[in-house]
Length: 181
Image 1: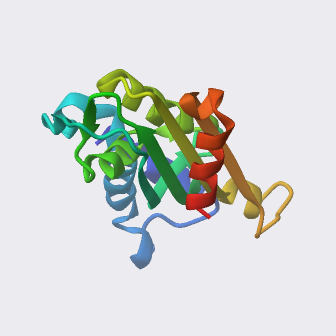
Image 2: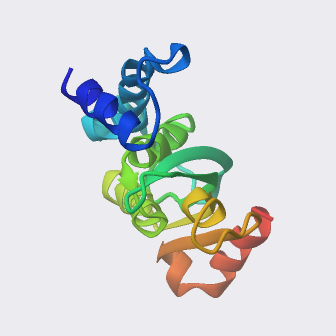
C-alpha cells in the first residue's frame, strides 16, 4: 500500500485530481507496472538458467540477435528499449538458446543505464559457461532523451561489451558485427 499512497500523493502535485474517474485506480496500476518493470531485482540467475548449461563439442560462434528489451533509466525512471544481440564462442559448454533472452530480461528489468546492462549480460555469460569469448551489442531508444532534455526522437544509443576472443581477435569481432547487421 505504501507505493500506492506515494502515487496518490504525486497526482495532485502534478496538478491532477486523484478522484477523477480515469485516475481512481492509477496508484494500483502504477504499482503493478513498476513491480513488473523492476522484477529483475528478485530474479535469481541460476533459477532462470534452470540447469540449461550443456557440455558440447562445438567451437563456432553462437548468436542470438534482435532480442527485444525494455528497461527504466535510473536517472529519470523513463523507459529505454531496443534490441540486444548476444554472441559467444563456446569452450566446452553452451547455454540453452532460450535462456539468453531470459538473461537479458533479468538485467533489463531493473533501474539501469545501458552501459551497465550490456556489461552485466556479457559478464554473466562469461561466469556461467567460461566461453572463449562473449560479445554483446545493445541498441536503445531512451525516452529521457527523446521526450525531454535534448528532445531528439530518432537518436539511438549503441553499447557493446567484448570479452575474450571478441576483444582480442579483430576477425571474431568483425564476424559478429557483420552477422548482426
